[in-house]
Image (cartoon, rainbow, N blue to C red):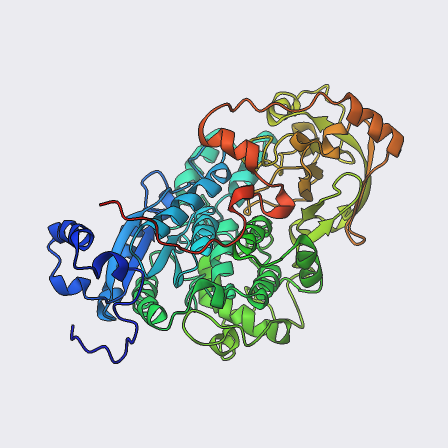
Length: 580
Ligand code: FES
């Protein structure tokens, strides 16, 4: 590497120089210990230091291939004249973490924020994959606002079982209900496990991981085509290497995260989420990231912007294909091209081009996977935000995953006071329930579960399934997996544990759901609601120590992104005192 600074006027003037650019005792300490790795002295001459924030973990199978990806990012960083430094952060695994990975999203975000702030990096590449890792790392980085690129790990290859295309999560729910209905043996159920997960990568449905990878691409923080390249495709490694090169340029040009994540780019991401039939979880994650950026995105923006966006993508859980097919069909750029004038075309992206310039010439190679805008896969792709006396702060539903005939329905509430109560009674032959009822689940929101679990898509009672019925209305303060489907009202705010009206619903109450008119109404008088509120015994969390205690005491409600109240708002990266 030459000492020519002509392409890097800020060489030696960045954050990292405040560690490595000093000729005193502190500079000695910072450099000398790093040199135990055999790093030449010129690595500390002021060139950009790039953090590679890695969520690799063997307990997180979706991200277990990330060591290879990190190596490719490093190659790119070296090629562009930077110094890569890989560092680990908390890795939440959707499939392994209990009680729910979402409980730890904010913890991971704090790990990321504090690591970036405390360490001498000028830019950062975020390696993300499994559902919560993408929002957690973006939230933490947003709080610091240095140049940032997201590299997603990519989805698994398509699942195949007995000649049928099977999708992560989607077929877990489907097969489990088939077992309950007597349509599948337990032996077949168990044998489908391996067929469902046949390569490295994250869930290959348009679940939350794929949704968030698409979010990162559409909002401009990831490189072009990031969302759909399969985990094991060689082009995933090319993309990682290009990200390594590009982040060095972004540092030199001082392209910070807030220069890419503008209000317009959030609006683009919301509309793209509608067009891909993205996960309901994107709502809460995007609200949290916007909150960290100090951008006022609300549930009303989701409803307003998503209302007219048709769903173009025929992927599970709403459709029949998987992410591998999506990639071969043209991927997210083909969808964005279809959206045309829906989006803010001049929003900038990480590769230095506008979103529109990146996508405007992309071809679609399979119209059964990506539909044209004038002949969409489903008319309504956006998320509908419901309001009423049952959810004054809002609740959401994904119409593209729901049954059209249930979009307007009045039904009798069958109430479950907890998820355990649901499991205990759902298959009781004496449970007074039929397909016209509405299943109501309480105390599964951010504080109540705690951690806002993905249990809102409660399985149907066996006696209903055995009639051949596959959907009923379900209402809760929980989330649902992005791989799930059904007429499921989620994120009711305030949640039951915070004294929201959901806590006061009783068996036999009548509830009106009217999605076209965005209404969710508990048909009792205001006086009766007030009487029940007065008689409520309150909610006491069993968590009395550690992070879970802090979480329950400080978590915001779903309509505010379920972030911790003291983390909202961008804080920047002020240098701390020296320690030597
Ligand atoms: Fe990791 Fe689905 S379990 S993305």
